[in-house]
Amino acid sequence: MSNEKQSKEEELSFEQAMQQLEEIVGKLEEGDVPLEKAIEYFQNGMELSKLCHDKLQHVEKQMDYILREDGELKPFELQEEEKS
Image (cartoon, rainbow, N blue to C red; front, side, top):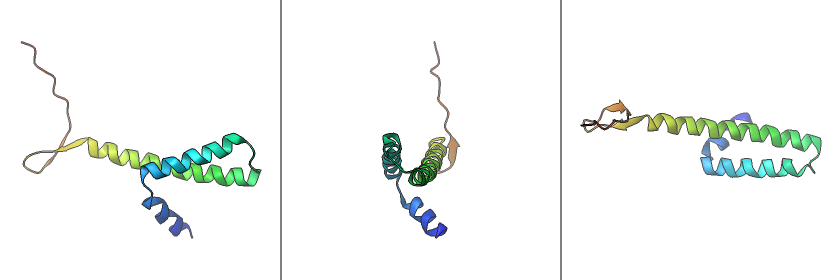
């Protein structure tokens, strides 16, 4: 069952995960949730939060590199303009 849940989460886009996370936060903020359900929401929220964090880290790593003309990956560095 854990594997099904994990593969289901991996299929979520960042935007879908954020939307679900916002819904969970909204339900918890209402405060009208039984304790057991609140714990379940909190656990789901933490899983979604980790998923979003992991996706952001992946994108950051991709942004650290740019593709050079010869096809090699090169670390991205900002070039400062030379002052004359």
